[in-house]
Length: 81
Image (tube, rainbow, N blue to C red; front, side):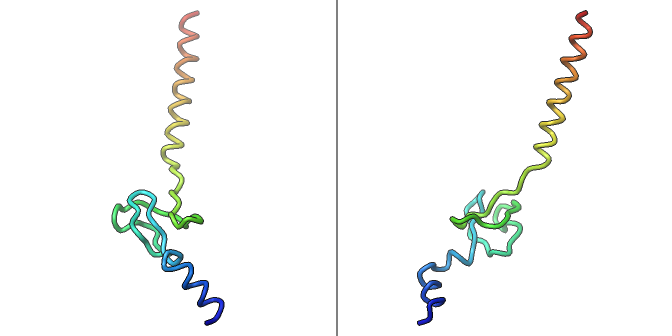
Protein backbone atom coordinates (compact mmCIF):
# COMPACT_ATOMS: atom_id res chain seq x y z
CA UNK A 1 0.00 0.00 0.00
CA UNK A 2 1.16 3.51 -0.68
CA UNK A 3 1.64 6.03 2.11
CA UNK A 4 -1.37 8.07 0.96
CA UNK A 5 -3.60 5.00 1.05
CA UNK A 6 -2.38 4.09 4.56
CA UNK A 7 -3.04 7.63 5.86
CA UNK A 8 -6.48 7.57 4.27
CA UNK A 9 -7.27 4.27 5.97
CA UNK A 10 -6.02 5.48 9.36
CA UNK A 11 -7.95 8.74 9.27
CA UNK A 12 -11.18 7.16 8.17
CA UNK A 13 -14.21 8.75 6.57
CA UNK A 14 -14.49 11.64 9.05
CA UNK A 15 -11.81 13.64 7.24
CA UNK A 16 -14.07 13.83 4.19
CA UNK A 17 -17.02 15.27 6.07
CA UNK A 18 -17.82 17.88 8.68
CA UNK A 19 -20.41 18.05 11.44
CA UNK A 20 -22.98 20.79 11.90
CA UNK A 21 -22.23 22.76 15.13
CA UNK A 22 -25.96 23.07 15.87
CA UNK A 23 -27.39 19.57 15.31
CA UNK A 24 -24.18 17.48 14.75
CA UNK A 25 -25.33 15.94 11.47
CA UNK A 26 -22.55 14.87 9.10
CA UNK A 27 -22.26 17.13 6.06
CA UNK A 28 -20.10 17.09 2.97
CA UNK A 29 -17.07 19.40 3.03
CA UNK A 30 -18.55 21.70 0.39
CA UNK A 31 -21.91 22.16 2.17
CA UNK A 32 -22.72 25.77 3.09
CA UNK A 33 -26.10 25.09 4.74
CA UNK A 34 -27.06 22.17 6.99
CA UNK A 35 -29.81 20.10 5.39
CA UNK A 36 -31.20 19.11 8.79
CA UNK A 37 -31.50 22.43 10.66
CA UNK A 38 -30.96 24.92 7.79
CA UNK A 39 -28.19 26.83 9.61
CA UNK A 40 -25.27 28.24 7.65
CA UNK A 41 -21.94 26.50 8.31
CA UNK A 42 -18.34 27.31 7.43
CA UNK A 43 -15.17 25.25 7.07
CA UNK A 44 -14.45 22.57 9.70
CA UNK A 45 -11.97 22.99 12.54
CA UNK A 46 -9.32 20.39 13.36
CA UNK A 47 -11.93 18.22 15.11
CA UNK A 48 -14.23 18.08 12.08
CA UNK A 49 -16.94 20.34 13.47
CA UNK A 50 -17.96 23.17 11.15
CA UNK A 51 -17.43 26.70 12.41
CA UNK A 52 -20.41 28.93 13.08
CA UNK A 53 -20.57 32.05 10.91
CA UNK A 54 -20.25 35.42 12.67
CA UNK A 55 -23.61 36.96 13.53
CA UNK A 56 -23.30 40.48 12.09
CA UNK A 57 -26.96 41.32 12.70
CA UNK A 58 -26.67 40.58 16.41
CA UNK A 59 -23.39 42.50 16.65
CA UNK A 60 -24.83 45.58 14.94
CA UNK A 61 -28.04 45.39 17.00
CA UNK A 62 -25.99 45.34 20.21
CA UNK A 63 -23.97 48.40 19.13
CA UNK A 64 -27.12 50.32 18.16
CA UNK A 65 -28.76 49.40 21.47
CA UNK A 66 -25.75 50.60 23.49
CA UNK A 67 -25.61 53.82 21.43
CA UNK A 68 -29.31 54.46 22.08
CA UNK A 69 -28.82 53.82 25.79
CA UNK A 70 -25.85 56.21 25.84
CA UNK A 71 -27.92 58.86 24.07
CA UNK A 72 -30.72 58.36 26.61
CA UNK A 73 -28.30 58.81 29.52
CA UNK A 74 -26.89 61.94 27.91
CA UNK A 75 -30.40 63.31 27.31
CA UNK A 76 -31.45 62.44 30.89
CA UNK A 77 -28.39 64.20 32.36
CA UNK A 78 -29.22 67.37 30.40
CA UNK A 79 -32.85 67.25 31.56
CA UNK A 80 -31.78 67.00 35.20
CA UNK A 81 -29.79 70.29 35.06
